[in-house]
Length: 130
Image (cartoon, rainbow, N blue to C red; front, side):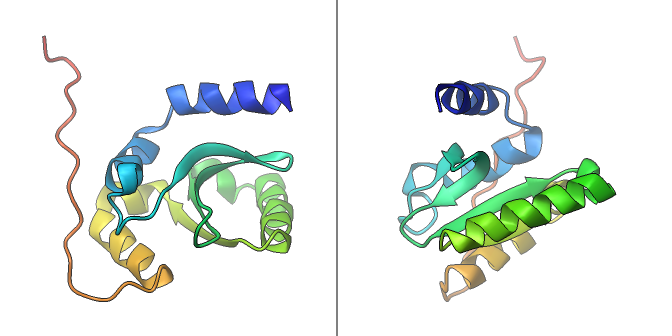
């Protein structure tokens, strides 16, 4: 368990650009008051984002998740998470990169939130700014 906690801390420190972009939108109860945990241990797995209140897990997948061994692993992992009472929703990296509004609207649908609300947009990267 201690190893899981350290690994999750490391993952939080080294989030992918796509994880950062989604985290910007859902952190600090900004997504309709729901609290999310990021890189959170659940059983033997670490989930990207979790809302305990709604029992929803959000996973962001890169291209490596298209490989057979990873598909099998993801399926086993998803079965476990569902058996724990969670709904798992997955987005591809390019969904986050190219269609964050669509991702936001899908999350609203999954969380059963009505209305026409535009998601907050992450500020441009400050990399290279001195």
